[in-house]
Amino acid sequence: RITRAELELDSVERGGLRRMRWSRRLREVPSRIWSDDEWRRLQLGYRAGAMEEKWNVFAEGQTVFCHRSWTGLGYFEVTFALVEGGGWRISSGKVARDRSDLLTRLLPGRRRHSDAFNLVLLELVLSGIVLGEPAAELRAKLNELVRKQSPAPDDIPDGFAEHVFRGQRSE
Image (cartoon, rainbow, N blue to C red; front, side, top):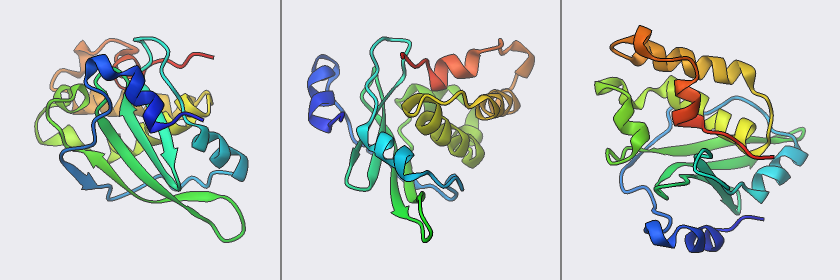
């Protein structure tokens, strides 16, 4: 299980983990219902092992925290709730509004905090990075959203959105 304390030690030379200074409530959260096994795996977290891996994820109780691995900045904080009939669903969450973070600087203007973008990125980090699922549909949606939000969509190379926002996952 990855803990906040472990990640603090790993990133101490870069200032440690940093909580979101400014955040806003997620207006929409993924509708996915996570199985009990997936919830257990999400609670174990994920630690980036190389620069190409962009996310550190850990859980405290029923809240999952997603921090950028290099800067330590918190980007998502989501709370899960047990679903009647089995499984877990994200019941609420927050997203960073910190302009010093790469994620918020790369998307232009007022569209910087696109609800659709955050919805896709959150689910992609949890399913594709933490759980190691292929998540091809989510990856394609992320690329599409970034192109739509760009002032010059034809200038965005294939794989840009995944490299910058999602990052890689080591096995």
